Length: 175
View 1 (cartoon, rainbow, N blue to C red):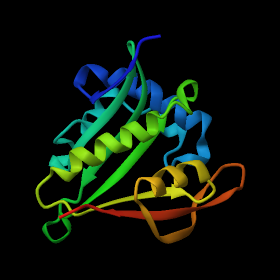
View 2: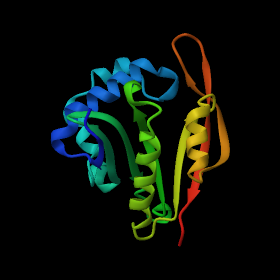
View 3: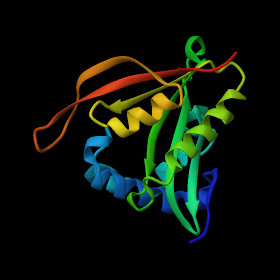
């Protein structure tokens, strides 16, 4: 198996990114706010908003983990567009393929993203939300310096009737 490489997402990666995202949403409905059925119908072109400068310039980047020609991990950071809160960026859609869980890919993606974000002028805080019962993800975020600052009860309602809370986490950048 080829070595896993971290790199910025490009236009040519959109199909592979969508395939990973669709698989993760279907396999782990409790981990994501988006639902697999709706997102599965989403047009491939709509993922262009996750490229740098997407969403009207608010997307900072999507970082991929690539094993050979397969996208096996991804995360996106977007920056607040409103002037008074442009010092805040939010982590969206952190995911690692089931076949690659436990290999340190999530940690590597997050570490590389934090280094990249520390170089963004004026950026002071990173935020995320994570399903409160996802102890592995919460442990990863905490080990990278994120701290819980709140909880949104009943944040997600699944079709099977489960109601899930979301922990809100924050990392203050140096500077």
